[in-house]
Image (tube, rainbow, N blue to C red):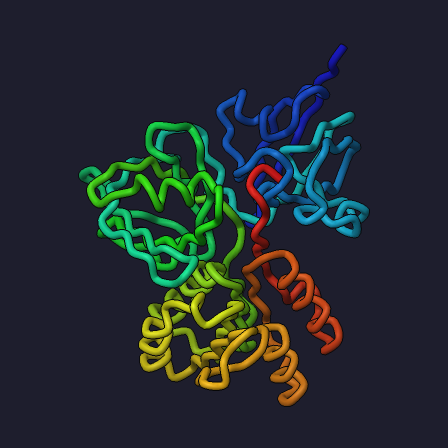
Length: 345
């Protein structure tokens, strides 16, 4: 017979909320049952959105992706709340503020209209949508993501906007086209301007951290450029003084995109430098030749700078960058990341 325990969630701003959770249900589900909407996305142990640190109590964890919760983090007491089943009362510290917790499903989703659709590289499409309704404003922290629902289905995929909060209701998504992918198939075959699409969110904890005037280095693989662009655009809007460098990497020249947008941003931001990297490039390629990991290693070795690192890309790139940073003496707590994980992993 299932027992019932108290779960206390403590937020970054030292606020807390306590609710009941049965031993046969995960913490996210228990919250939903009581109209408490903690930050979560896949609810399958794959995306790390619901990660927290259990500071008190005991629990068992269900099946999850080791990319979302590496073994060393699990050993240290980190948990994925969608896979956390309490066996005693527990207290969990989460890396977001109390205002990120919702108490009603209203406001968590809205309808938007497709306003632009274009292929911008061999494997990336740009999708622009605009919120429908009298209140068009979209609010999110740069680095967060939204879930987009394929029209006529209940299938959703998560994507980070490349733009910033705005009153016009615009959201710009950079979407990698994958053979056989459900959202990719929709983008290629069925998406069209004027179509309505359900948007849920925002979610996620990836975003800018305050650390004085420490330089910020942004490393993006492919469409991982989207949240990176959003964060740098926010820095530009707020005229933040930190030096920043964008390391944008793809495999081939045919896959590169948004070079004009990056150049324009750099022209407007005297603090911004660009490293546009192509791994398998021709002799004629005019920017960096090699992977973002190789170019980052070169710069760190040459300058000795120890910046804050922001990472968004596939797990292999993220793990390799971690190794480089460790070699250069950059602490793990100065590395902020978002890994691309397979849907339903």
